[in-house]
Image 1: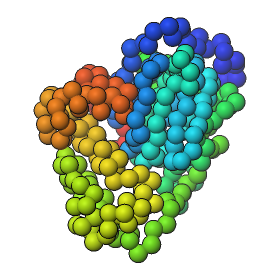
Image 2: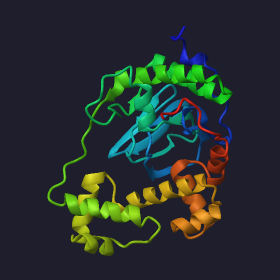
Image 3: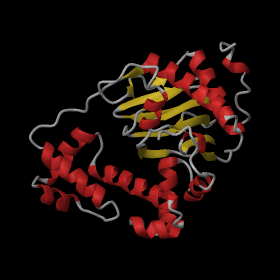
Amino acid sequence: MIYRSIWRLNLPHSMANENPVHYWRAVEFGGMEVLRGTYRRHSFARHAHDEFALALVESGAVTFDLEGCTHHATPGCITLINPGEYHTGQAASNAGWSFRAIYPDVELVEWILHDVTPRPSGPLSFSRTVVENDLQAAVCFMDFHRSLERSESPLQLETQLLELLTVLVSRYGRHSYSRPRVGSERRAVNQARELLEENSSKNLSLNKLAESVGLSPFHLLRSFGQAFGVPPHVYQAQCRLRRAKTLLDSRLSPAQVAFETGYFDQSHFTREFRRRLGITPGQYIKGAGQLGPRDSLCPP
C-alpha cells in the first residue's frame, strides 16, 4: 500500500560523521544525475541547474536561499527547484542533513508526462519550493530512488518515475512562469548574457562587459540582475561550470578541464566544482563513466 509511515522507511543512519557522497548517472533515463549524501559542514555556494533539482530530505534539516526567499526543509519534505533558479544550501544545525536527489532535464520530464498532462502553453515548472506533509509523494520519491540504487528493471523504474512525476506535477506544477520585466535594456542585457556564455573561461571585467553592450556598469548590473535573477559574475560562473561538466563528459582530465575553462589551477577547479555541486570532479567522472550506450528509455 502506498500510504505508510515515512518513519518506517529505514530513514537515516547516524550522521555522527559526514558520509561519503554517492553520485551516479541513470543510463535508463539518458544519463540523469542522481545523488544521495549527508552533509554537516558543507555549504553549497549559490548556483543553478540546467535541469530540475528534486530532493527528499531523509533526516536532519536544510536551509537554503532561493531567489530572495529563505526556505527550510525537514525529514519527509521534498524540495522542488526549477531549471535556472539560483539557490544555496547548508545544514540548519550541527547535526547536518541527509537527502536523496534526482536531476531530470525538462525534455525528460515532458516526455515522461506527455500522455498524462495537457499540452503545456509554456515552460513546465513547479510553483511550490518545499513540499511538506505529502506522504504519498515522499513514499514515491523514496521508492524510486531506492530502485535506482538497486538497478531495478527499466520497466519498474519508468513506472515509478511516471508515478512520482504525476503526483508532483499534478499537485505542484504550473505550465508557465515569467521573469521580471526588463525595459528598453533587454537587447543589451541579452547581448551581455551571450558574451558571458561565449567567454565563460575569460576573466571579463564589469566595465568591459558594460562598454561592449553600451550601458554603464551600474545600469548593466541592475538590469542584468532584474532580467536573470543573479549578477553577471554568478551567471558566468554557472556557464563555466556547465562547460566544465561537458569537458569532463568528453573524458578530459580535471587538470585539462581546469586549464580549458579558466580556473586558476586544478585545486581551484575542484574547490569551486564541489562548492556548487557538492561532489568533486573525480566523483562526477566516475558517475559519468558508468554510462554505456543509451537505452530505450531516454527521449529519442
